[in-house]
Length: 448
Image (cartoon, rainbow, N blue to C red):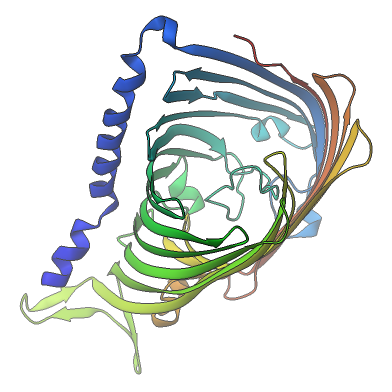
């Protein structure tokens, strides 16, 4: 019973309250600053274009594929307010697409919007920051491969005419303990819902994570680190009584070598232990077949509950090159534990490569490739299709070419390929998708 009480204390809902308290602590500083002490900057962005997409409805039977094309609008406004010690950023974004060329093409139309906000404060030996926001995005989005862009935490099999609604809050604090020592703490909370979960079998979920890390600089070229983390996950499979509660504890050691001023080589290695509870199962598999669960205290049959423990290696190795705060080259192999919209924490093994190059002062190209394989934490101890449904493989490849016509106007063309595959069970599938984009982009210069 004591172990159960400890797990309850680590629920995502409890961590949400901690994150909200951090937000209230940071906001008043900027609001209380004299009006003349706040410097505001505004930078607009606008892109219009078109795309061609194969298999927009993500069917696994080639004879059912129906190509489509679309007109797309992508607009955002980057706003920053700064004082001597505080910074506030707000970057609202709207993306809309209107489809044609396919049967019932209007069913593919979507309007996505993102409302992220960031607040930071710089002290003598500390830096505190809080990122939060809300987004409503189509689950048909094409996964990106550019490490300069934040990854989608909920990549899974795309389904037509459904939206993911997500709000998140993520406070962090960094201390400069000594000239060579930095201690940091990061907390994140995500609440994710899907608009047609009972039809698409996605799961609404809550996920929270806390990381505490120490970094020590041995020499200007060598750095070591230690990271400890705890994460919690709660979900319920729509249309059923099945619930998944997971708590994971982990840690790893890290090392980074500065090969040159712009190139670093590094790696981490560690372990994670997960306590998984799956409740509400109607039957358990036994040597004589599936049977309901009998509760001797209630003297009746009840829904079954499975508790299991899983241990996994976590870590990564990487080579990264940065120029002017932009990643130009990255090669990375990693294993991590992440939340998933299918209703569980999953182990994700991934390999990625990204390269960008300036062919001239005005022309820049990039190529990114990502492969990942996922499996539910504790899946080997969960019987039936519920455990197997999380086993998936993903491939993404994106190649782009940018031609900058002026300081603010750019023509961008992009080709992307994506494959989502599951090769086990009666619901096995293989879904390939191709996409070609052509954009005209306007990036406004910051204005005060």
